[in-house]
Length: 107
Image (cartoon, rainbow, N blue to C red):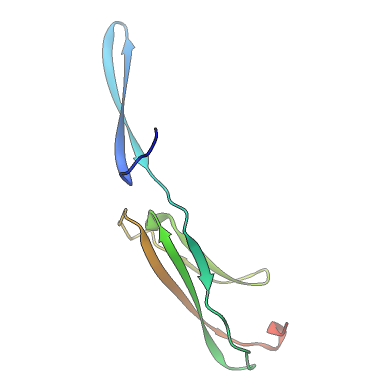
């Protein structure tokens, strides 16, 4: 397949079995990786203060298969999925998470 323009479509396949022509349908989902994934600049942190992390994911599809994860070193801070969203067109979205600055965040 070349130059597929529908995000969610079906493909028909034809075959012959015992001189009888058969048709099968296969679902085709076109994926588009984001144009960019950007974490907003974080100001110098003060221990004990709360900060909002903001991540922008630009032009991705389908959104229901997207997962955004905020990490602190090897620790997962927040995971956001969009399984309930059904849009098939390109989407730009923001994901946010509140985090409390800790002494070990230095550096």
